[in-house]
Image 1 (cartoon, helix red, strand yellow):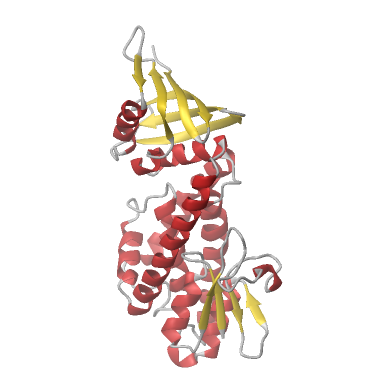
Image 2 (cartoon, helix red, strand yellow; image 1 turned 120 degrees about the horizontal axis):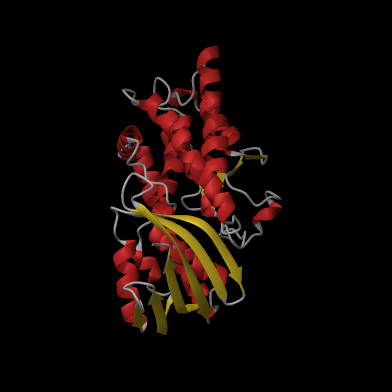
Length: 332
């Protein structure tokens, strides 16, 4: 068998299942952007949609879609006991595979990960987080796994929960999910699979950053990365976004506000805000027009609406760097 995968994509679940089953299998990496395999083949010749995972079976047939691939691995390796065999157990497995695939993978996380999803789509997705994750967390209280023992559903859920690393979703409000993810992270098959793909992911990111360095980011890409620095509390994302001659103006202190000139001055202010995990931003709207962008936001430092303020940033991007920013806050 051969598994076509992309590092830390949903195909990680299949790798985990294959390691659990101790299956004889080879792996071929697929670049999610170019759709080329490690051997230089156009992956769309294997799967016209260019989506992983795809499992090439011993007879040459190919199988796609995570739920199908995972169930095939479980059925082909019954000794690994990765799936129930009784009627109720099979139904419960289908329930969790369906929920993870539709409510978490596609509805919640995909809009937060893809650049094509605008602020409205991302906002809608974030609005689903509490109900979906609370339901899973409630089920996992006092339980080690989703079913009575480790199954392919756990491999899939672990994989999807990894994506909190790249999105604004923080699992801290759901201690049961934090404990579940940390516990599974130590499982030998998962530790092996995750560490392998993390190394490959870092290599992939380094290649992409090298390619991007030759082509300046668009205004949309710059603003998306800028917003991510604050939403995810990752100030390092700002480092290559700020022009040496950047000018940042704020409305406070009154009456004339503050003016920060130069890359280091702008970075110092923005880094201080981005790294503050006792407060958080929520995006209300982002509008892009050529070199210019408008970002409307609300900033929270406490639990109630009164512990917040609303504002707007007017940005100008040139050559893939922020050259001008003006921040305005609503107030009395």
